[in-house]
Length: 607
Image 1 (tube, rainbow, N blue to C red):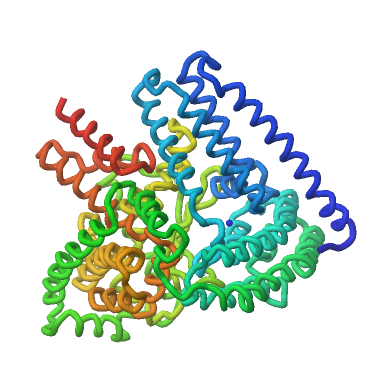
Image 2: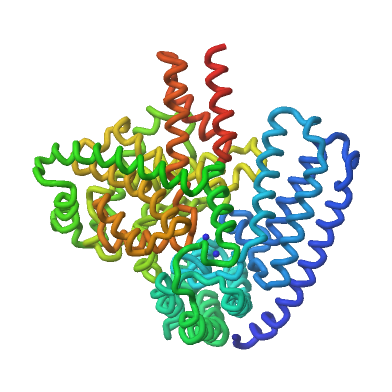
């Protein structure tokens, strides 16, 4: 995911100390609640103590990371940002270590089976969080895919905008942006000092991305987008006053702050950013990459093992691609077929509107097919929208942003409309099934609506292997849903599976086995029909998010294996809707816990 005219001067000057006083008292109250629960016997039972502690930590997350509440429609602390200063960051790290120590003091044996599952889930996550404190993640706060030059506008765009009070909250939050930028500059400088920066080659678009946030005209800035679509329930005079205050804040604080960021980034940071691409070249890089691999895959697989799995999958999928290619009548080899797919204008749309319309048509065809494969469907709706113009050039082909029933906000499948000659029609069915339904929207919306689960299971976005593994598995459901009837779309589905297999090879190759960036691009291009622009963007993504791309194929392979084993065991008694509801019915989790859950379901079907 995220100065003033007239009386606004006094309001903003007072806002910071008042908010700090509120924060201090609220934090102290949480510390006192925690201290009262810290010792065994401080509640009626260990189960009661565990629940009280996890309820407390929900309040703690909302206080310390207010953007969490924004995403999930929780109306608390929405006039604030997470304090990204070094002092606050170190304080939160200490809080995490203390929280883990207290939770580990709970007698797990005294918990029932479901509570033990909850306990294992939150404790394993906290252990990973503590382990990550060893590394220099905070020293690299900006890359071409994420950072305050992109996340802030996104967060502001999903805040409620129904009333004058909502806009006052927006203004208060916007007033904190200058501090976020200044603290980011400190982290960037610290990264240079310790030798922790993204590779320079991946940062080439970032200066323009920063400038995209701060055009000379305030109304053109993504940061002020909520003020360009105000509801009619707010009077014209009030709208004018709110816009005036936002524009004043923009001119006196926001734009100058981002100009400072741009100046530092272009004149100091970029020239000193590292040339190498491997994570192993960062401080403690070998251990750092191994940690990322473990976190992202939730397995103990080594980079070499994952690399070998990827090579085997590339060989398997390549043979399937050749068979489908022959269905199209193409007599040449895969390389010539890839060239045809990349260059034939018939495979591309002429306008962004046509591309988005086609995605929406696919989504409409997918929706009614879900009842054949799922017993439980979510209530949260979703839409298809374009990737924001300020980020589209360096963004990936598509991504999903969760919605919130509480906030009345739909989920959104963001499709990239930049460079239409790199967005082929044959990839669209697989991509829609991954990002929308039955992929990310279905899985995440169901998870958020599981009201009987604790907050960290309903709202958790961790366990990437589960979330992205499900998204890739969802693509494979296309044939059962009536998709991939055209050989080019079928080839597109294989291309997308190949894309994720290639990730296993090139991510580990670049970060652990000495591959160059060009070597990764060439391997990608030789084995997938994606366009060169897409391939370059993807490889640069793997460089700045080491290990993240491994989650997709590792997760998909495990889910497919669990389904195949369940089908073999149950035979005619296998119920695909029951299997899918079991996989999605308890939220995201590590793959070993998912395996146990599915095995329990299979056993229950036999009893």
